Length: 60
Image 1 (cartoon, helix red, strand yellow):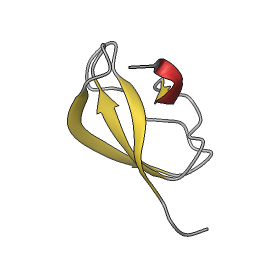
Image 2 (image 1 turned 90 degrees about the vertical axis):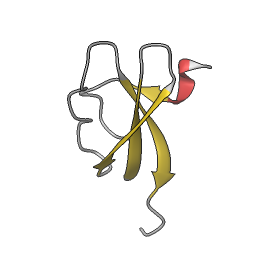
Image 3 (image 1 turned 90 degrees about the horizontal axis):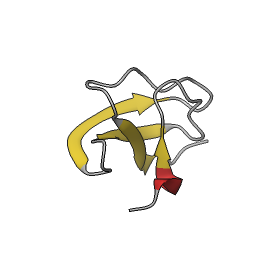
Image 4 (image 1 turned 60 degrees about the vertical axis):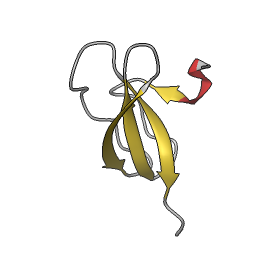
């Protein structure tokens, strides 16, 4: 899996939507957070975790 679609905690969210927390190797955890475009991604639950946009908001 490429890191192209993974975002680090604290990075600015490129789009509003549901972001899944991924493990250190990129596997999904099943835990999602809602983040608004331009806001920082929240702290992870454990070290090494990142975020993947799984469900972008469909409204503008």
